[in-house]
Image (tube, rainbow, N blue to C red; front, side, top):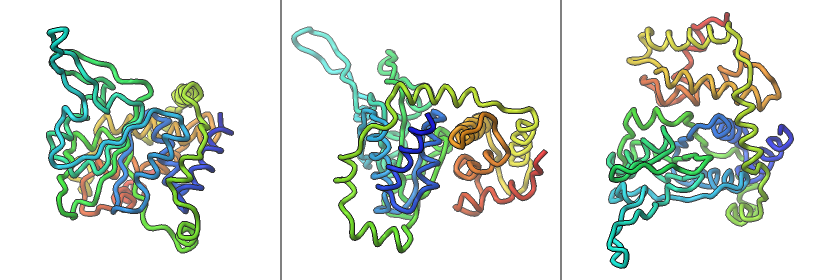
Length: 301
C-alpha cells in the first residue's frame, strides 16, 4: 500500500512542480474520505492538480464550471417528461461521477452552491422526494478564486465546513517555473499517467486509515485544541464537532502515509492549518497564521 502511495506522490510531483506538501495534503484529504477546497488565483495549477489525482486514482472524473447562471438542476440532474412512456424520468447530472471538480465554485450563486450540500455530507441527492445514491468513492475537489476578484460570491459557513481541507498552491519557485516553461504542456503529460492506486486498493487504504490507533492522550490534545478555539478571543467562533472529527481523520491519514500505525501530536499539527484554517474566522486569511495561536498556546500532553 505504502509503495503505491509513494509512486502516486512521485508521479503527481512530476506534473505539479515544486508543491510536494500541497500534493501530500490533497492525497491525505482523499484517503480520509474528505472533500478538498483549493483556493488561489487563476493559473497556478488548481485544475491540473485535480485532473492529475483523478487520473492516478483511475476515477470517473467530471468537471463542472460554476458560473453565475448555473442552476442546481445543471449539477444534480432533472426529471424530464418521456412522451413515449408518458411519465417523467430522472436524467442524472454530472454530479453522478466518482470525482467532481467544482471549478471556480464561488463564481456561482449560493443557490447553485447549495446543490452540493447534501451530496458532500451524505453522498446522495434528493430530487422531487426521491433519493439517489452517489457512486463510491465520491470526492469533490473545488477551486475558488480569491474573494476580492470580480464576480465572486462568498461560500457560506455551511458549505465551507463540508470541505475537510482547504489548501493554497501559490506561485512556483524559480527552479520549478523554469522546468515548467521549458518542459512539455501539463495536459499532455496528464494523458500519459497510469492508474497507480486502483479503486479496490484505495478502498483498502481508506479502511486501514480508520484502523490507525489513537491514544487517549492524543484525544486529550485534540480536545484541548477544540476547546481553545471555542474560548480564545483570537476567534469569534470555534471548531464544530464535525471539524474535530475532520481533524482526527486527517491526522490518521497523515500518520498512515508516514508508515505509522498510531497518531502522534505532530500529525495533528501537520494537518491543522489545512483542516481548521477555513473554519476559524480571524483577521488573517493565511491558514498558517490563523492556527499559529493554537500551536503556540495549546500544550502537548
